[in-house]
Image (tube, rainbow, N blue to C red; front, side, top):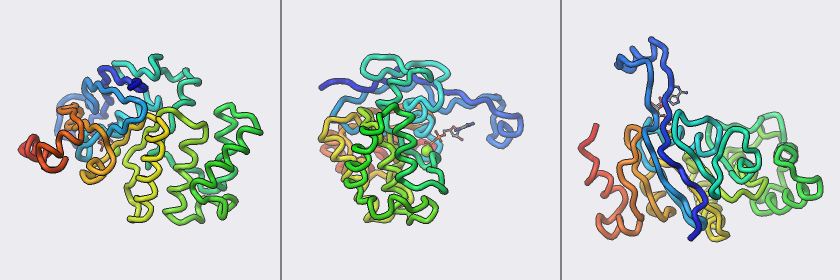
Length: 255
Ligand SMILES: Nc1ncnc2c1ncn2[C@@H]1O[C@H](COP(=O)(O)OP(=O)(O)O)[C@@H](O)[C@H]1O
Ligand SMILES: [Mg+2]
């Protein structure tokens, strides 16, 4: 298969104030959140970064989406290096994270049109795409409601819709089912599967083992900023029974 995303020796260090360093009990004024992480994601593949809180998952995915730049290392999409300036490449990425909130005072419809303009879609394309995406998520009924007045499930649908405004080739979802009830979680999983079968490259982060079992083709275990293992999910399940068993058999003794 064809490689879409290459993360090459990604490292991210954050400067810490002396107070932050003291609170963390470290003498260094720098925190290495992501430490020399490399992985690839192919089209039609779902790759999961799995790890405990603070492992560096969000930081990794923020770099992959060009929201922050790596301290060192490189990200390539379709063989081209991603920089903050590479607008055409950023249009290929659909990003979803719990920190990236939609403006509560705008409606889904307005937000969609606004993003479509940013991505350079013509008015015609924008309208067509909106019809298509809103129908997919069943948003039509509340497309003019202010986002603050939507239920959590509806908000999640709106966020998913906004992540695919420009029909991205790479989908990057940080903890996509966090805080959702079982029905909304299932909707998200189904959507990710659909995107996979349409040939998108998908990378998700999660701390939920069962989501990896159900959804991912390959998994990378991220611990303390390091990618300690990368393996096909089928392989791990065959050998250990489940991804959770594999994780604790191999790394349960750490921390
Ligand atoms: N902007 C920042 N400044 C300082 N430290 C940060 C910043 N963002 C994340 N960190 C730290 O980097 C580490 C990894 O965080 P994160 O990527 O959010 O992990 P995860 O998503 O796996 O829970 C944590 O110790 C976190 O506190
Ligand atoms: Mg996180």
